[in-house]
Length: 140
Image 1: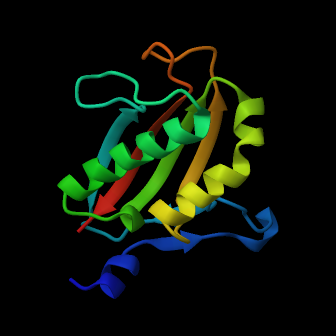
Image 2: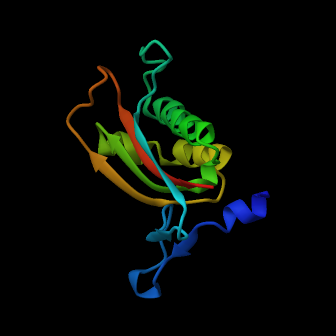
Image 3: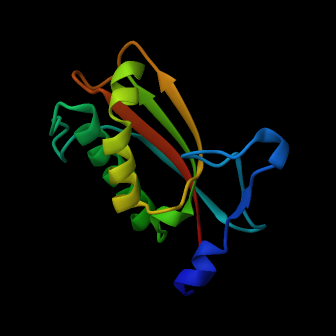
């Protein structure tokens, strides 16, 4: 399956009455018979479970890389990610980091935006973690 076929696998659903989404997609429709991959929450840890960085943007990039690694291990690409939830411990830090997060997103995923939810939480399981990302992907 070529790159074009892989990209065409997910149908983007953005009803005009909901307004144009920025940085996410309202809905993603998977084709019949597709395989769905559930990616556990990923933080900015190394293979030993130690945090690799302290800043939100750096942690976001590492967590996102880890999500993409799981998707690739299942035979997919970042463009197969259909749904993502991003948990942050500080909404203000997230807002302040938007320019850096956008640059990271474009470098790692490009112009593909899955349906997304952003949630502020009081803490994450990994001590010192500022961000955690879980995802669902539809892989060939």
